[in-house]
Length: 292
Image (cartoon, rainbow, N blue to C red):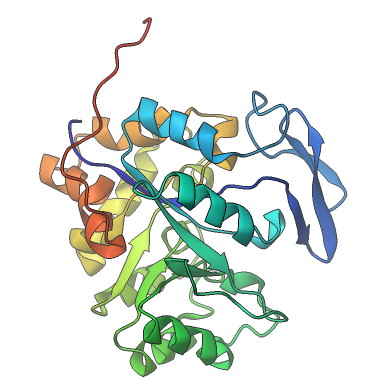
């Protein structure tokens, strides 16, 4: 499709040094990582040095004709604030970056576009207990990228935060954890004016079905009927989802479906994210012929 595309959910790291369940997560080479005592293929094997770099991301974005990306964070990767600042300095027009909120540390807002909250991993799961970070983001004009606990466990406290911070922009990740019971209630939060839903991890959640992910497309239709197509944004969850599919496949299953109109595809793939994250692209990325 010849349209502007924005990836609303991407990860980067110079060195993976995270934690899961109180145990370390660290790279062991060839794209693999020790994940709390288990070896997992954390990224494609061509990332043999285990550096998930901005340069590799930009190369993938160019090939898939993705204009811009939003770099979020996760505890399992470790705090990447400094590397994201360096990455944005190099690719300022194409990246938006989030600092990582950690309960035991100060969180940064200077030079960041947003703040990432791994809400499902918080020790205190009641989001009202973390009101300070939401109010600070609202005060400084930053968006919050939040991955909520499965189902509707945090919906009530999230609504309380939204009511307390009416001007705060919120992007709810992982499409509301669509494969868990109660996910529709997360989607319904986007009925609030400044709340959007992004689909990072959608291909992971429907991985057993695999390409072209018809049930994932059906979930998009369900979400559209709940909150409207103008509140939904595409995201890839790069690079973890690229262990079995290519980056371009994460775009193509949306482009190829006949269940969405062309206008809906354009809104989902980039139009809505342009508005939410404040990108200012004028033209789609150019098409590059490949050897096939």
